[in-house]
Image (cartoon, rainbow, N blue to C red; front, side, top):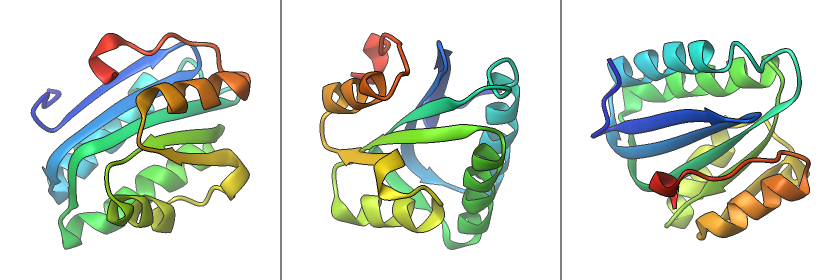
Length: 134
């Protein structure tokens, strides 16, 4: 069962939109990993992207970081080619940068949701960002 107080996820076109909130435990990371696999099953046969909003996310607990890494690894192995991350603090950017394996030209960091959506569109991922992510 999704935990709206901790995350929101939707697929729009070939973009997985994710909004992270609060502190994630190992159990939440495991649940999110499973949900990501279910949500992208219809688009993972071709290149897809992620829009990730971490402005309201504090971070995972230390024991959850390994599972967080597994989510990124699975996504990369299953055709996620681009990610636009909306963050508030440099610390958030460093956490995501450390666990993602994307080269800088495939991973965009910004503080504005409109910039992230525009960057994904410029890279061939046509979608309308749901209002709940703006």
